[in-house]
Image (tube, one colour):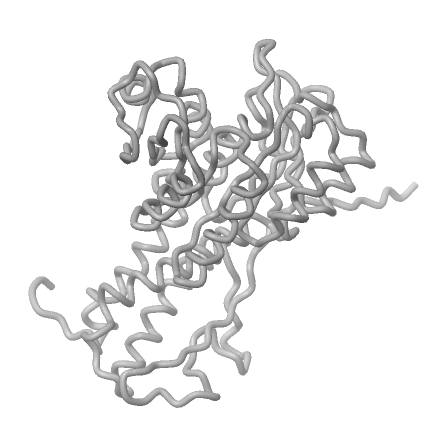
Length: 355
């Protein structure tokens, strides 16, 4: 039914909570909404100018803007599955303030995964992680992918130490480089591919065992080294004798990338829908609160149907969405509690063979 609708009567007029369901479906479809944010340091031969943003959806656009010789990082992200790359052209010889200005500028733009196209200093890595945490506290959620250089890629212990220094649910640290047609790419140079792989995956999919379009890794780790690296929260690329794959999709805190992306999607969607359809538009009374709860429930149910999460059974005492019993929802404030269990991917299979 077109025209006016009553936001407190969702079962009859679904115009309000359909936004939640559409948001859930959008998150599930993944790649079409996966944006990689990337500063670019070299772009001679193109039309781009310093301290400007450019949205790139294909290699031809990238070549025109930045010159064909400078677009490998962008190509990596697009080839891995990112829908687009949001590129910021850095000044020719960036100083510390230029890094700060770049990160501040990114705060006003939508993106899902942030990555540098080359190795940056430990100081700027730390600053970038601090920036990511600050944005998380303010409600802007994205992942950051880091990498090392040719020297550190040869010593997994050094890479693991970086993972420890960069420990966070939202951070990923690649510690092994790749070889493509005889050309070595450091872990930081290949990080844009991993960023695109993360951005392009659906939130009900993991990047564990994702096969990479490369010939080899710059250092093949032994099983004991892989185990140590995974325990350290490093993202390992390994050659299994036939192909190169992501050993396990982990953040530096040891959390699964799949789980973190689902959390980010839920937090982002609920905040956006509240801003667009609820704040200032619905009365804080029983009818209004019930409408809000019904809308969030519909959103979560869509994610449950697509194996993103599991909601409590109807028989359980703890509902999926309810008013917070410890805080009274009065005046202009509503306090809710959401309960669900994340669905993980099958990554370890144990078999007993009976003889």
